[in-house]
Length: 184
Image (cartoon, rainbow, N blue to C red; front, side, top):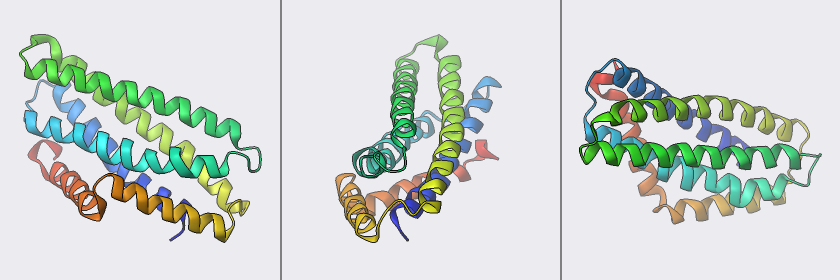
């Protein structure tokens, strides 16, 4: 697997997170109960897997490597702006989640709203990035040497989030959430 394929593979996992966030939002809007622990797990997966690991690979290595190729700098600039929006949505979700935990009565709707916003963002954003990745592959924009450097950086990103063990734990948490009764 090369660097571009690895990022596209990550997007499959991000879409699973999107589906979890959307289903959770739907249930909250329907006034159904979601265990607070499950909501907290969603926030951990968003922070650790989506932000620190996946977007870390893109922001710290992949985009800097591809921004000066084939006029991709404008696409990358837009992706980075979207990351800031995604981070704001995630922070607002976590803020409202913590307020709800602390007894704020009106926090169910904002938690549901930010989960829905996050879900929509992930779906839209991964679609755009997949098209970008397809262009990278079609244009053979990365040399084998550049790809090798990216793969080494991706490995360092894995270590920064706790290594393969922590990534596996994130995958287990996603599977756990997918198996929850409220996901059915």
